[in-house]
Length: 249
Image 1 (tube, one colour):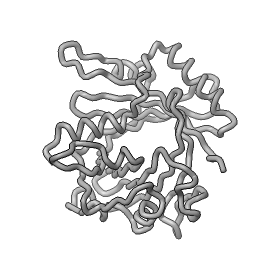
Image 2: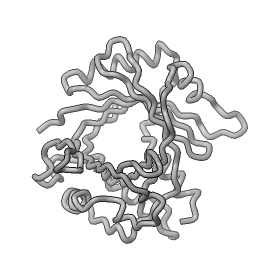
Image 3: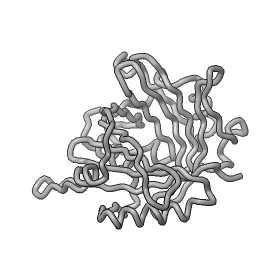
């Protein structure tokens, strides 16, 4: 088995140094001409306790994310990353596009960030309500099919009654841009919370084109003199660790 698509990512990040704040991300947005975006609200859910400020779910490869795109529209995603084909229930071996009869979108994709490569399986459902403002329990943010996906395919048991919603962050999804040497358009997304600021550029390509596409995207970053973050720590992990360390949940 192999994924149908590979998502290739590069990230720029501003180090949180109040004495000498960097502006790499802001400069990159301007230099790349990234426009046409309205901010979204993004909320992650984690297993947080007073005695152990840790990313327990992320550590077992579970990401629970809810995005509010307007006051009454958004989507909820359960992502398993890193994932394995062998941990997935056979019902989830193939990608599924959402339609009128099936509200959930299932994607199994390779995830490349520098030399770090993994498999990610995610199920997303779009919604048209005000669930982020309704005071719902964590389990009520996701569909029954998503909860079945989590229960049957996660490497560990997750009791959502013991999971907390973290403080929201702001995300901006920009319009796509064209890069020489790439047939796929490049998507930009910026995350900001407190002093943290990240810009991620990503492309989605077929596996046979992934090596060449990653080289072309890297060359583009060098040509634009944009400093890529080579730490190999995902923006999701950095943001979750920051939120947990600074929140009073």
